[in-house]
Length: 72
Image (cartoon, rainbow, N blue to C red; front, side, top):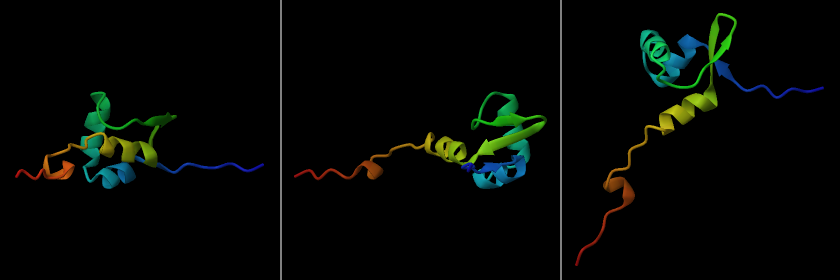
């Protein structure tokens, strides 16, 4: 029997991944903000894919990123 394991990060690793402090990550979690997380007993775990999706959800498209229009 084989199991495919997804990679989970603890609070410290997740904060480093997001480039925020652990205190910020704790505050987000207590306020219902931030990325999805999982509880395993008293441990808080974040799936790498969920962290990447959280970052992507903040994507803002600017006019330059949509391509410049040529008037003429």
